[in-house]
Every structure is written in C-alpha cells, then in structure tokens.
Length: 260
Image (cartoon, rainbow, N blue to C red; front, side, top):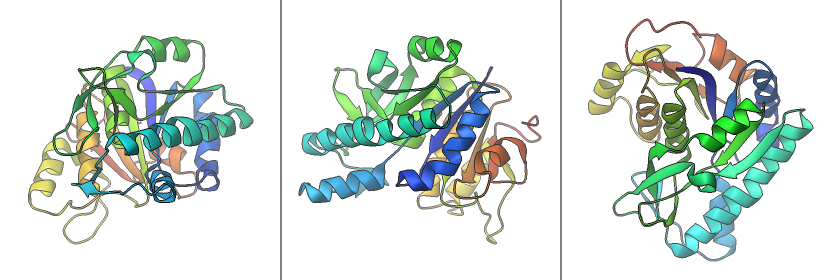
C-alpha cells in the first residue's frame, strides 16, 4: 500500500472548487495526490444547450453516442482544463488526462445504460511516472471497454478504481453532504464494509449515497486502506477529511482502522 491519496472532486463551477483546489496543492507538497473529477451538472447544461436528451437509470446517465461526444468534450476539455489551470495557479504542477490516455482505466460496459463502463483495472505506468516527477494527475472519468470503445464512467467509480489499482492508502470522495447517516439520522464517523453492506440492504443508505458507498467499498483492495465520504464545501474539507476522524464518514474493511 502506498501513501498516495486519491481525491474525487465534486461541485459544478470553478468558484465552488477553489478552496479544495488550494488544499489539494498544499497536500501535494507532502504526499502524492491523484485528483479525479466529475462534471455531471456541467454536462447536463451542455446537453440541454445542444438539445440532447438526458436520462438516468439507477443513478447513471444513459450515454448514447451523441451524449458521449458531449461528455468527452466537457469532462476532458472544459472541466479538466479549468481544474488544471487553477491548480497550476495555486503552485501545483498539475497535468490533465483522461482514463483513456495511456490506457489508464480499463473498463467493462454496464448493461442498459449505453456507453457507460465500470472500472475493472488500471494501467498505472503513466500515473506512476507523473507522481515520481512530483506532478499531480487530474483525471477525467472516461475509459475504453474490451472492444476499445470510449465510455463514460461515474467519477466515484473512476476514483475508487484508481485508488484500488494504485494501492492508495486513502480515497476521499468529496460530496455535498457531511457523511453517511444511520436510521436515526445521526452521522456515522466510521463504518466497516460489513456494516455498510447491511445499511444498504436495509435501506438506511439509499438514493445517491448508495453508489458512493459502493465505490468506497471497491477501493478497499489493500489491508489498512480507507475511504472517506465528506462535505467538500466545508471549511478545510480535504485536510480535515485526511486528519480529523470525526469529519465525514470513514469506510474501512474492518473496525478500528489505523489513523490517517
């Protein structure tokens, strides 16, 4: 397991991301960081402008060839370039790429959602070379499937796949809520994989939190790894997610995981 931390960034505009990006730059001076971003709301805006219909199945955007063109343009072009530029302004040597570059993300097509894939493997050569050079990879969630077709990938899934493939000690999933809650509505500081599965099964974890928790669980490929689900809009969100065990919800393979 490595000291790499994979951060999945949420939010819709650069202004919303600015604080977390400053923190990414700070953390990257101390340990290797890989940043994965989404851009779903920006994609929806562009699809509406272009008259391309949007439909979701089980929280995943159904992606036909027209929607994929927009996804590639918005994720790899607009959003990725904005984030790289902002990180470089913050003194961070950021490099933009997608999961297609260097065959980084290996995908498997999901049923009934069109050109959408889940991550089944990582070719880490490119990422490793960037991290060794002290650079911060900023990854747009696209991947090729077994037939070589470029597909859209849920950003949480892409981040979790990278965390598992790189042997990252920590995955931070930035979201718009403060963590996972129990049946009484209380935020849980930590849950194990077994507890998370039970909470999903009984419906306590529901809606948009289900794919996030499942992504967190898929990142726990190494003993001692942990995933943190946290509110990206909170003050000092990234630093607190990494260092404050009462901030957000930590997901680990077993109870009493080691301190961050």
